[in-house]
Image (cartoon, rainbow, N blue to C red):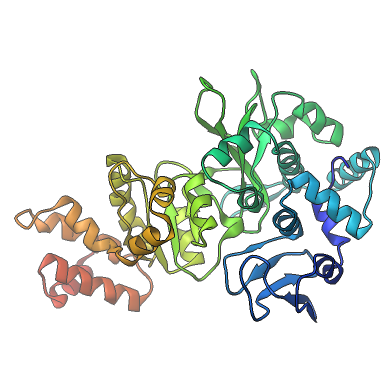
Length: 423
């Protein structure tokens, strides 16, 4: 079955029928959600819940979450295309290739006009969202038995986690012709970064969809898989529709109002998510003001877990004060020299990661200690810290940082407050 619109497919799935088909135990209809014993761990009380409207599921007792496709891939130990085929059979869903193309084309051509978001100076185009979503599904269909799957399996990533993040493979050729046949325009393919004046930008690469807060796929980043293919990483170019400084990777998986571990690389984020850690990855070399504000809208505590080399330490130092300015409780998880989150987790496992997260360092303390010794001039340091603290709006968090700053720099809190009033 070709070119399945997975979102359309999921609308045809009866969740009760699906769970009973796979003989999940203690299936119970609870209105919008259906409960059952979780098939991902040894469950004794129904902690697995699946939503009827879109088949999204999560377990209250283990990190498992995803959709009906991810569930079938897990239960059947099968590929993404095989899972969609099985779901279509179970739900009685079947659409031939020509009608699917017509369906997609009609959806795209009836999209609303572009809308400008004045808060971010970013243009949002519903047609681009639809093209990007369709492209992601195609890349996922090309994923099984591809260079991308081989690469991720060598690094210890399962097909289940690849599906959760909608990772895919951009074929050697033919994708743009397929997209135009489905209704996309050459201009849209260029804006999303698929085509350039020199050909197809992402050919033979591992594809990472980048989502906005609403879950719409807005752009892509891609990693080379062929020896000598430069650059190693490339992405959708900056335009009115996408500015990387306004996004973070992994937003589609994030749990709001929980601490977030911020990492450098996309695969670092995927690795931590596979272990149940709430994680996001930066897009670019340094956090922007907008990215800091985005983080603050999601959580009040961020743990920086950047690479353990000199560049990672420098980046950690530079990002602490901008995060503090937004009122975030910043902490630092320092990795050994030469390690990144992915390699650390593979080497030390869940227990090593848990131990690392239990020994995080206060961000302001890290900032002070990383550049100044006890005999160094604290005046300049204090001025920098106070400039950031003074920008905080939350008076409770500001007081906490005033106390920390006083203790670290050897001044009284009253002296700190006096200096703040001068700024």
